[in-house]
Amino acid sequence: MKKLDLTFENWWNGDIELRKLISTSIQLKRILINTNSILSFPEKEVEKIQLKQEELFNSIRDLTNRFIQDFNNRFTNAPSPADMYH
Image (tube, rainbow, N blue to C red; front, side, top):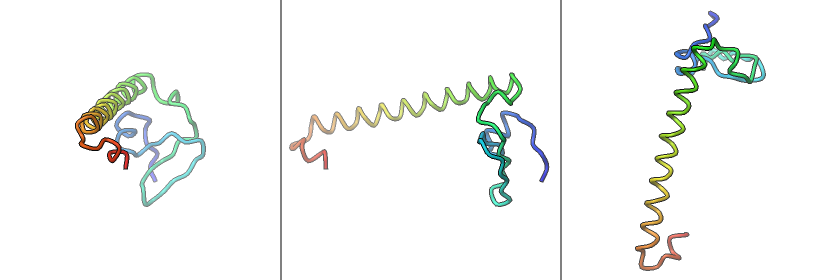
């Protein structure tokens, strides 16, 4: 298996994961890096990864807030709010 460069694209595609142990999987076609630190990536790639992680976090946070707001609206307007817990 060819060794992949530590790039944002390889991280984003799931070809590289950060792990403590080295393991390779032909089925998953992944190379697991023997580190739990993003610092093994070049600095410009770290910046890209961190920006993407922030973007993903914000989108998940926004989605979670919408779910909470939806539940609160349904709970408040429900004929029997206690049933909403079930």
